[in-house]
Length: 179
Image (tube, rainbow, N blue to C red; front, side):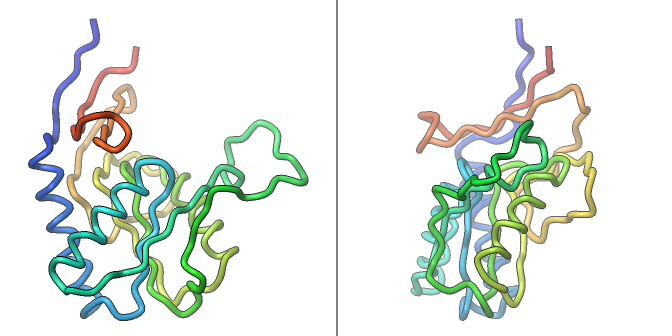
C-alpha cells in the first residue's frame, strides 16, 4: 500500500496560480516585453494557465512558449552528436525580453539548468525569472525560484506528484513515499 497525502487540491492550485500571476505582474511592473515559457510537460499547461490569468488581470495577451529540454539534460546516458531539439515552440524573439520560465516542481535544479541552456540557445533574454508550482527543496545547484505556489519541505525518499487536468484528468498535488 502506498501512503499518499494530498498537498494541494484543484482550488489550492487555482489560488496559487492566481497569486503567482499577480506577483509576476507586480514584480515586472506590468507585462511589457514579457514572455511565459513552460517546461515540457506540465510546465506548459501551468504556463498557459498563468497567461490566461494575466490576460484576465491586465487585459493583455502575453506570448507563451513551450520548451523541450530533452537534449539539454545532464542525466542522459548517451547523447547523440546529431541530436536536434524538437518540440520547443518559442515566440519568434526572446532576445531582450523578460522570460518567465514555468515548471511544476523544483527539486535538484537540474531541470531548470537544462532549461536555461535551451533558452539561451534560442536568444539572449534581458532577464529570466523562475515560477514553480511546488518547491520541494534539496537543491544540487544554486537555483532559486522567483515565484512559488507552495514551499513543501520533503525527504529525499518522498515523491511529489503533480497531476493536471490537461494530462491527468484532475488537478491535484500529492506526496508519497518512494518504495
